[in-house]
Length: 378
Ligand SMILES: *Cc1c(COP(=O)(O)O)cnc(C)c1O
Image 1 (cartoon, rainbow, N blue to C red):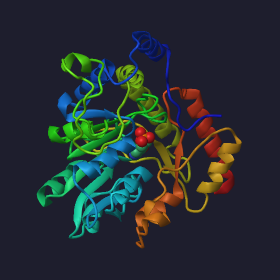
Image 2 (image 1 turned 30 degrees about the vertical axis):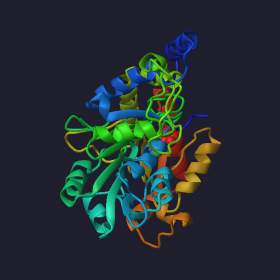
Image 3 (image 1 turned 180 degrees about the horizontal axis):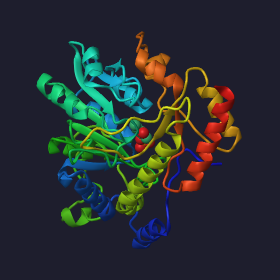
């Protein structure tokens, strides 16, 4: 089976894990600090502006709490988004207000966002679909002018930039994921960025029971007397990262440039081989100054055949999927709106395999199978 996505973990990650095991400290400690510092450098911010977490979902949930978003507040987000985004909003009592997206990039344009703004809009939450930055600059500027918070779910876009600036740092809060399906894998893990370092201080406390003290091996050194006493500043939970995961994530981060280069070459090969195939529309070119992470590769097909194409490719050993089912169609969010561009894209888009272990010959296999399946259907 050619997988749609797959992690690339090697001997270097295993060696890093072995070292952590042998140190006898597997909790949150020096490796987490080192990973945070390396990630901050990667996105061009200071270490006090980021904190690791156990997941990206936790970063999105925390963003609501840190920005004090709750009952009576609206949060605008593209309907073509990951479920965790809408869950974070709804779970805090706020209302997710879904906006439409550009049908080609599946990112919301500034105009799409503007069309969904209400008097109660307190924040906008965007996703950079498949690694395409989208109109993040324009959306950030609009939010700043209007006094609306911007939260960037950058789980798809760990290496994406606009004019050299990392996406995820254009707004007030950014969130990244290091789960099994992402480009930088920490087994599981997340990162939160906040423009205001005070929010990161708060995030760190909430992520560790709301304690004033940090979880760290050097705790005993810092409290000469009665280091077992506690002070609680908020009723927090335990959503910190550990040194085992941080060690894996850190090694992966050093490999990120090669991961991006490989995915870029896969993307270019798909683009070249699919150009001119009847019925296939490939992703649009990147605007000047935009850098992609090449997280997704997708094609758009004539109406009515996408599901059948997916089934036939699966039968030939090629796993494809669709990202992301429009959330306004999910009953739990109770949104009675029509978002025609996203709805159309959701019926004709198919995500093709792309990952760091995919070979040129795998790409050739996928393209040949797709051509063959399409020739019988159109
Ligand atoms: C993977 C993903 C998440 C959730 O990340 P976890 O670390 O698994 O919680 C959130 N948003 C997007 C866009 C994702 O791709």
